Length: 87
Image 1 (tube, one colour):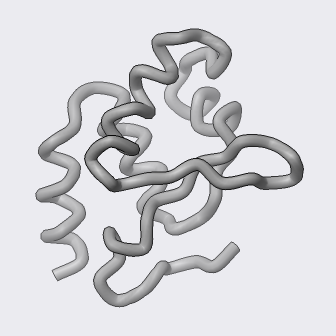
Image 2: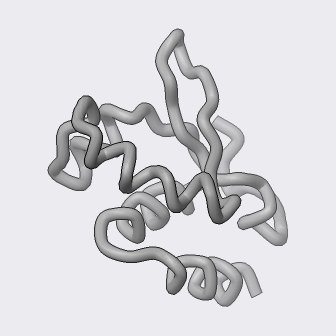
């Protein structure tokens, strides 16, 4: 059930937005810089914000604070049986 929900959600995304979604499925909070590094992009560019935007507007992810930095995490609604990691 969880994987089915996440697969349906992921189908609504394209390109690197889909890769970011996959990174967030671990349930952890990720800094913008760490996500950008994993997808081979610069988090300071406007194009990076364009990759994050669909995740937020479709209700898959939200910004949170992590050690004074702006970070991203998947919303609880994407985890039918609970978040796999609370860290």
